[in-house]
Amino acid sequence: MVNMVNKNLVAGLIAAIVLLAFIVIDVTAAPTGQMADLENADSIDWVLTVGRAVRNPLRITYQELLAMPSVTKRAVLVCVDDTAGMYAIDAAWTGVPLKDILERARPLDNAVKVAFFSADGYSTDLDLESAMGPEVLVTYLKDNAPASTWEGRNSLRLVVPGRWGY
Image (tube, rainbow, N blue to C red):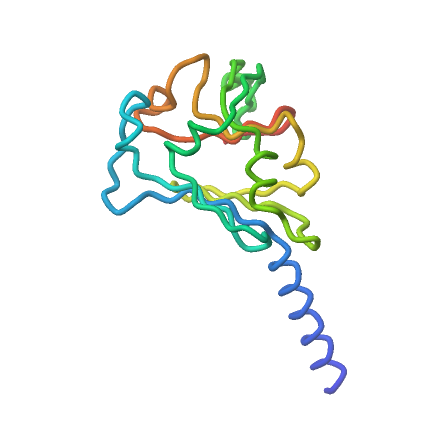
């Protein structure tokens, strides 16, 4: 009985340590829930938050993201549900290197993964080393078109070349 309790306690502690070692990036809509186009960036109402296993938690608005240094890189984004090759998007993606955002947040020494949560309920993660790669972008333009033209609403895309997308 004591052995079982100790094993459960250790398993619970390990789970807690792993959970605390995640950096969490979340895109949440502001209360109004209205989205606007890039030209009206002042009215876009979501916030990108970076927290948990960081020294400097961040809340980045769309306007602040647009003001950050950006890069444009050509990459293919392939939908994870694409078994026939019909949903591969080869585009020039413009956005902020995720590395720049993470460096501002200053990950804790024990951080091992970056978890991503989107406003539409999708979530995924990357190991910290991959997330810090120079090719990983938080994008807001595809082929110089505002994100609002992708699905009728403003959104961000996490573009990680060589990985599946959603």
